[in-house]
Amino acid sequence: MKVEVESSASMRGRKMGTSVIVVGAGPAGLMLAGELRLAGAEVVLVDRLDGPTDESRGMGFTARTMEIFRQRGLLHRFGEVITPIAGHFGSLPLDFSPDNGIHASVSGVPQRFTEQVLRDWVASLGVTVAYGHEVTALTDHGDTVEAEIAGPNGTERLHAAYLVGCDGGRSTVRRLGGFDFPGQDATVELLLADISGPAISPRFTGERSPAGIVLAAPLGPDVSRIVIRLHGARPQHRTESVEFAEVAAAWKQLTGEDISGATAHWVSSFTDAARLVDSYRRGRILLAGDAAHIHLPAGGQGMNVSLQDSFNLGWKLGAVVTGRAPDTLLDTYHEERHQVGQALITNTLAQGMLFFGGSETQPLRDVMTRLIGFEEPNRFLIGQASGLDVRYDVGIGAHPGLGLRMPDLDVATGADPGTTTVSQLLGPGRGVLLDLADDATLRQTAAPWNDRVEVTTGAFRDLPSYEPFAGTDAVLLRPDGHVAWTSPGTDDGLETALNRWFGTPRT
Image (tube, rainbow, N blue to C red; front, side):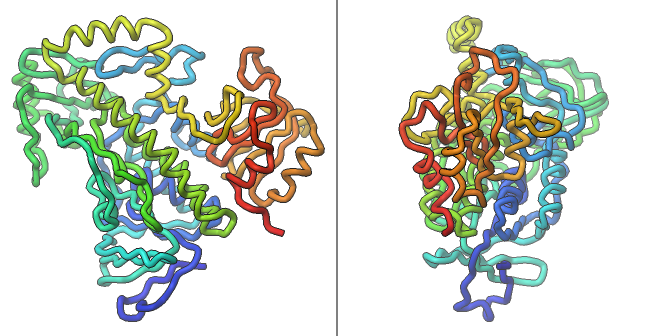
């Protein structure tokens, strides 16, 4: 069923069926649109901007995002990527090399290119971004949601089964949908510019002076990103764009270097405001990405958590609107991602305290530096930063992998050429049941769900003895790659897990 677009007068009293309106064509909106299409849902994707942004914004992605892109066959579209094994927490160095560097992030990829890759992907799935369309009113009718959208041809009215706001930190959907957005107002402001021309010495974790802090990192052969924090500067609640002259003056004040003659490719400002919606869902209206959480962009986590919101929601919402799962499945979206959002807010607030504090916080930085030098604290922080340690409540059980994302292990299937990987099995966006003990009874139990769960019989190849999945006979994976059930190791039976995550099978 297709989304209907008609004039306001002709749409009165009309109802809509299985479709979703996604508002916002940034990373979260594009990822969500793609996931919905993989699940068979009809999608209308609108954005108030006149076209794609050329701003660089985020400059890479975390290990979990890299994994997500690999699972959907997108990672190769980025070409050869750089994966440094060093990072920071509030300007304190982190070592990403434990566990063979699997937590390493990708650097040097501007957000505009990430969006282009996602835009090409959703276009191949039949989704076109309707630019220049802004949501002006929302009504949840209980069985449908109605949106008034102002566009080049005037105001139109769309009815759909659900609407998702992926429209950023100043979300119109959040405001019109009546979501509470508690949190902390901005206390500091930072200036940012991507420049070329003068040679800028890297200051990856920040250079401090009594007057403030500067950061600098190369973005390419002749482009650097600089970030400036002047101590005592208060947020200005700007209504106009930042001028590069202001950035250059602040840089000179803190470093003594004159960059006024540089070419500024992008100039902006940001703050440490931190807010999290009380609920990711209100009836038939949902939020994802920055529409649900804003925070200091410390460690580049914002875009990544936004993509992972959509990766969690897409398969669930797609299953609901196509009739394969009950509406209650959407409750798990808030349950799972709100706790991730809370951890994100806590994490970035802590980094802000370390980063922005003056001499009075130096003892805290000293203590944290020593703690990070030990394996467990370092491992905990890189697990948070990478997104690989997110665990969902999928049921009671003793298996150490339950609720975590499944590593991209090799699976020998016996078919020519005989080996596949977990990421390849997850590529179509369906559930996966790994039958690792050639269990005919297991396959028979799963058979009624064969329209939504792919059963693969095989064995892990070259699995280290310490790997948590050594000795596991079966693993049920959700479409987002998280482990929903294992045998042994889960108290509930397979049929219970299949019903919970994939709905009642068709008879």
